Image (cartoon, rainbow, N blue to C red; front, top):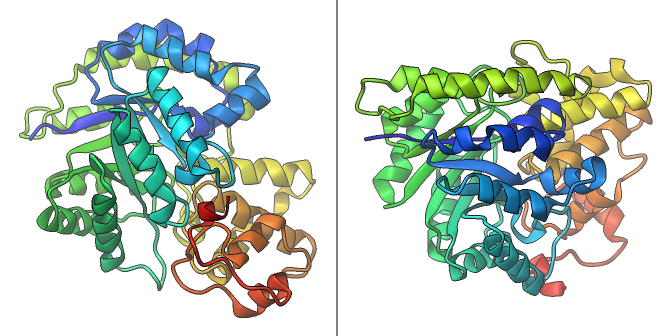
Length: 402
């Protein structure tokens, strides 16, 4: 069984390693070589790239998509879509979701990985249905996390709900690198045993388990995995493409990719990356603190930057210790955009003010009120009562109120 490789070098790699700053001008010179590799897909859009193009780079994100499609016509282009949040940080109405997906397909997008930060399938439904209605590949997502509220059955139930909604494949998204190899084997095995669905795995390298998790998932029957070209891999990012290609070469899982072609691409990014040194995080090697804090790769660099700007860089360990406590108060929600930013910001406030919840951020209040969807377990009742001020929480699909 050949394993399909999705390379994330044009999207999540630089989002995780240097704050989503990679410019189109540094993508296009290598695009033809990327297109010639034979990847299952290339992730190149979505996530934070839309925001970064406008906010930091002065680029038109739609032009970026069109130019990449023109430069890489053979390889399916893939994006990360935040369900009802699209590429923003709040819910949008269904007609906006439909129109956005229609324009993304029109401009060249082929594969949409659709996730919701709360793992609430109601928040993924409109986007998934829009993707399929426009003839693109709809990939539903399990945003993997661990907590007393999460069991194997949690993921099997969500898989079933996504299949009922209608998807072409399922992705397991391990945004914090906390999926252990044995848990990966069990999860993939059980999903494959129960459902007829193409399954993909995305892991971050932050804790040092990602390569092992990918290999055990492959042994369990996963169909595709995400990697990043070696010179844009590891630390906050992802397992190296070449390492996995070499590991699987000559086995029944052989990817069929040419490692010499990959090395030429790695050499290019080895030089390009030097331009973005100022945006690199501080992590060297792995960070075992993330096994507890569960902070996604991109969030760690943002936290470091946020604290540095407030002359509080020495508070990082305290913030990382506070994050799991805030997460528990908010119903053990997964930490992925936008919930990772919300929990991180609240943890920073709790530490810097010296008093937990002396200030409750607007977005934290939104989660407590139910404005983002169902939480895995009920939120802290006292905090919820404080923000509701006698009102009632939102229990319907949040977008139904738009």
